[in-house]
Amino acid sequence: MKTGEFNLKRMVRGWTAVAASALLISCASAPQEPQSNKFQLTLLHINDHHSTLAPKQQTLVWGDQEWQVEAGGFPRVAAQLKALRKANNNVLTLHAGDALTGSLYFTLFGSEADARMMNNVCFDAFTIGNHEFDNGDAGLVKFLQQLGTERCPTAKLGANIKPKVGDSPLTPNRDWEMFKPYTVVERNGEEIAIIGLDIASKTKKSSQPDETTEFLDELETARKYVAEVQQQGIEKIVLLTHIQYERDKELVQQLPGVDIVIGGDSHTLLGDFSGFGMESDGPYPTELTNADGDKVCLAHAYQYSLVVGEMQAFFDGDKIEECGGRPHYLLSNDIQVSDGIVTTYEPIKTALEESGVFSFVEPDAELQNMLEDYQSKVEDFSAEVLAQVPQQICSQEIDLPRRDGCADVMSSGAHRLVAEAFLHSVPEADFAIQNGGGVRSDISEGDFTVGDAFNVLPFANTLVKLELSGSEFKQAMEEALAYSVSDGGSTRAYPYGAGIRYSVDLTKEKGSRVSNLQVWDKGSNSWQPMMARATYVMVTNSFIAGGQDGYDTFYRVSERGRARNTGIDYAESLVNYARTQDVLKRPEDFATQSYVPAGDN
Image 1: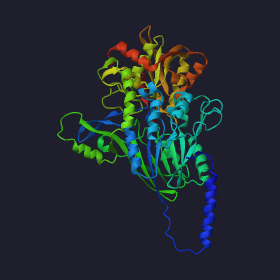
Image 2: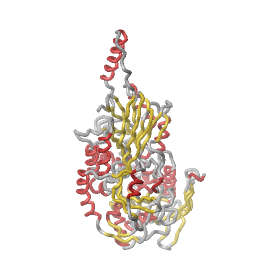
Image 3: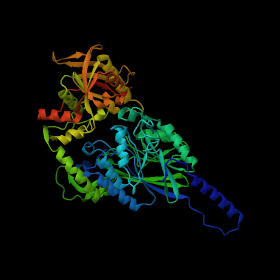
Image 4: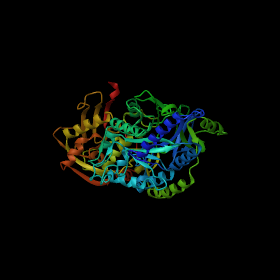
C-alpha cells in the first residue's frame, strides 16, 4: 500500500510498456486474443457507527402488523463484511468516518473498544470524521495510534485536514505524520486511489479540534488530489468522504476523474425499504455524472452499525460502465410480532430475505466475546434506576417531522428536560441553553437508569456558567441560527432552553431571526422581557460555551473572563436531576414559542 507520493516504478513500468509495444509492432507475430478492459471492483463499507457496538431493537411494519427484531451491532457488521469478502474478488473494505462517540462504550473505554473491533474487521481505509475530534487533536492521535496493526495497516485519510506543524500532536514534526491525504491500493493489477475528505465547516464549528487546526475547502482539496493521482497514471479514483449525501452529489458534478464516492456524516439510508415502514433518501447505489460527463457510483450505509453497504462497480477501461450492489440491513433471525398472535413467522422472514435490503446475520463469535467483556462493565455502570417515565419523552429536533408516540408539540421534550437538569445543577443561573446535537436519544417509558442518562447525553461535556448581557445572548442566538441554515452548517445547532423563551423566524435576515426574548424571573414568578443591557447568568454545555455550533459570542464572553466551568459532567446533571424527581414527566412548556422554518420563505 502506497500513500500520497509519486511512484518512480510507475514511470519505469510505463516506459517499459512503450518499448514493448514498439518491439511488437516491428516484429511479425501471430494474431493474439484481444485483452479485456473489463474490471469489477467490490466496495464494502460502513459509516457513522458512533461507538454503537451492541445491537438495537428494530420495529418493522409489514402485513399491517408491527414486528420486533434485534438489528445491527458490530459483531454482525464484522460477520457480514468477512462473508462478503470471501464471496467477492477485488474487494475494498472502507469506513467513511465518525467511528467514535455516542455510546457508553466510548464514555467508559474511550476509543479502545472501537479500535479493537475495527482492527479485527480490517478496513483498507478510514476517513476521519468530525466526531473523531470531539476530544481534540490529542484524542484523535490516541485513536489513530490504536487503529491498524502490522497485519492490518488501515490507511487513515483526511486530505483537507491541516493541523499546525509543531503545534498539534497530529503533526509534531511535519505534515502527514498521523494520516495521509490519500492511499493507493492494487487489486488484480489495477491501481486504485482512495482520497479522504472531512466536512470542513462543521468539524471546525461543531466538534473540538485544536484552535490551530484548519479544514480546507472540500471541492478545492478534492480537485488537487484527483489531479495529483492522475499525474501518476492512476485513473480509478474513489472519494471516501464524510461530508453528507447531498453535498456528495453536488461535489461529484464539479469534479473530473472521480469514479466512486463512499460517504458518511448525514446518516443516509439508501435502498428501497418502503415495504417495511421505513423511508430512505435515494437508491443504492446512487448514479451520478462527474464533470467529465462520466458515470459515478455513490453510496452511504446509514448509521449505528446497522447497515453494511456492498457496492459493485463495473469498469470498462478506466470508466464506470455500470453501478450495482445493495445495502445489507443486519437482522437477527429471531422476529417477534409486537401485538397479537401469529401461527408462523415464515412469511415475514421470506419477505425480508427477498427484499434485497435486509440480511439475516449471526454475530461474529470472536467479536461477540469481545463485546460481552465490555458489555458487562457497561451494564454494571448503568444499571441503577433513577426515576420512572410514565410516557416516552422524545428527542425530536425542531426541523424534523413529529413522530408517533411523542408529544404533539413543536419542540423537543428530551431537550427541555436536559435544560431543566442544567438549571437544577446550577440553581444560581437565570436560564439554560442546550444545542440540538448534544441530546442523542429519547427517554423511553419505564425505568430511567444511569445508563439511559449517558445514552441521552453521551459526549464529554461539562456545565459552564456564563455571565452575559441580553444583547450578547441575542447575538449568540442569531449566530447559531445563521450557522444552522448555512451550507456546511448543522441544524443541530438549534437552541433549546429552560427559564427562557423566544420566537424564531428563519425566513428573516441574519440578525432579525430571534424575537420576543423573555426570562423567567424567580422573584416575581413571572416572565419578563430580556433587557439588552441587563446582565444574566446562563448555564450551558462546554461545547457551545467554547463557541462551537456557531455560538461565537459565547466564546468571546468566555475569553473575557466571564465564564466558569463548574466541572459537572452534563450527563451527571441529568442523573442527579432524575434522582430528585422520582418521576420524569413529559414537559408541556418549551422555550420556542413560535417557529417559521427557512423553507417557508
